[in-house]
Length: 240
Image 1: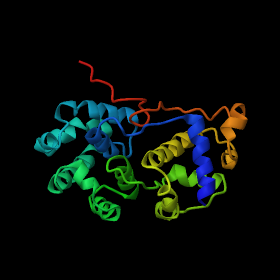
Image 2: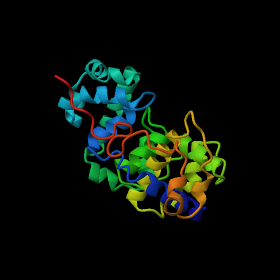
Image 3: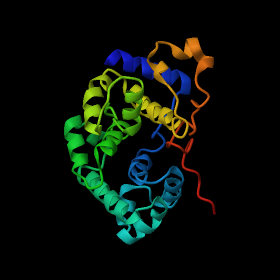
């Protein structure tokens, strides 16, 4: 199991390059992990622009639910996300309000605490664990499950099945590699939308070095790397 996925990771990394997802601002990135649910990057950017003057836990919690909802309205499902964000931030403050201290908790304990919060499912919890709290984990999202099936590395019917099967592999990686693996799988998966192609070649060692000119033309990253997924960098400044 480990060797084929290591080859896939190396091939994706060589072709698409470093992604640097969720590494612009710890609190801001954390908020976006909730805001991005059921919407697109442009809407998240608009919502985040509306929060630029209150980007601290205390300032966010000082907003009334109505005020916060109005600010994040562009991200859709804003009433629901307001409740989820307030629950997340309240938990964070009650847990000590310090990212480093919370990150020191055992991964299983921290994952269970995140999952107990309303609006935080397994995928979001694992993304938070990895990018916010520095825990190596495997995100068995739809892109990962589809890739695994296409290239013959296993059929996983559920998120939990793939997460549990590939978690031992994630633990062999460095934290940065684990983060990059998730980002690369998702970025590669987006190239399949509307133009599916055979990417079973990813299991062959050193594909980029030997067959760099033979990658399908569709395998071009649509979203810019570095920063928030799909934005190609930091959230753009709010226009006056």
